[in-house]
Image (cartoon, rainbow over all chains, first blue to last red; front, side):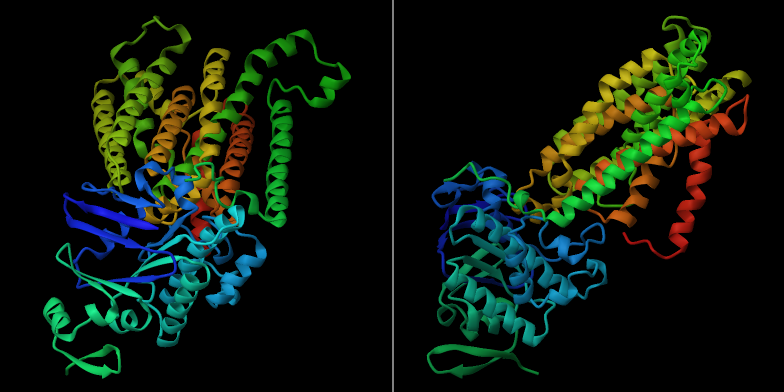
Length: 252
Length: 347
């Protein structure tokens, strides 16, 4: 379990102290306008940025106390796409940070519809295909650790994993993440721009604005039309759903 | 918390990849041994393996071969392996196929000190035959300490950029200093400096070779041990960190090993052009970008190329000899252009 005990950052970009938990089996969506601190928060959750206030702990231990290798067996990060320096073949790139064995790699590649791209170089792929490759790499990393230690769980951190995906791919990606959370007891933290995806697939939502978490709860509690219109300075209309958070659309 | 986790994925390298790795490295090693045998036999004082086995080598031949040829061959292997290996590592560290070992300013730092030695202390006999070597080594060491200080101090994604810019500044400064000294130099000193700048193994003596034998292999081993970390770094700093990489440690070790190893090489052999850029680049086109294969292959390939080029430099203009750096640049430049024009940049 990942816990924040008034964790935050003082340096720019700053992050006001946060308290909370991400538990195995749940999908947490982090949403908010540009520059709200979503990516900064995600890199702090992964331990790349050290909290300068209270600690961030994983399974009861401060992230700073873990060795990089041990931590890599428990959490993986999919950052927004960075060029990979050289042109890696997809089959090599997905096992770069952990090789769970041929069968498991094939299963993960199949889940992300990458099997036919295995021999291609990353530079020849479309943005959406690259995004799926990077998610497959993170899943291979966690699967390798799972195989070596025969345990489920793990923390998967994703920064806008659907930003370049088409509609169907978005749906399949979010369904896959949900399934991994439930079946593998993973904790999935996902920065999302699409609030309807957050409303549909997340168990909980953190709404960020100007380095602060301004709302925390179920999608229905957090994704209120008036609050979102104010936070995003957007003219929104809502399509009410029975017992669920409303669908949101932009007014022309 | 289980702190004894092994590095994920180490046990999962498939048999196919292992076979390929051994095949490629075995082939390169064999080629290097053949290249060495040819280099040992060629030129004005060659001793071929056949003569050696048949016992047809006179004591005089043997003495000359031992004193001149053997240190030269060893130095060729060490310098070639170091330049190409550190080229591959620097390209990995900077995530850019245009990086090479001279990027940090080591060669120009060494060049400046050699110029100071040659121009300002002409005829000085303090270090005997090793004057230029000592000056070059001190210059490279100075730059090495400066760069290492920078690599230690900075962290995060800006650190690599700082190194790059510092190298640029050092190169510019040393170039200006060298230019000033060239302005003051006599014609004979100018010739000496420009020959040094072309790079050559002709002055290899046992003393310099022994220094290289002590300093270069540890640097090569440090680089080889960082191969997986260099692979991870290709994912970007934040993702690589989440995959188990300690970026600061990687930067420190690669910069330290490169500074020490390349500094030594530049001191003993001057600036041998293109090797550090060309060998890893060509091998990457063939083998792919994974450093676990690319690094050792570059080292073997660099050693092979330099040993063969050095023998060619001896043989082509006999009894005189060309500076080998000139030859590697003359051969390497057009080949590099050909690769680019063929449109298979690949990286």
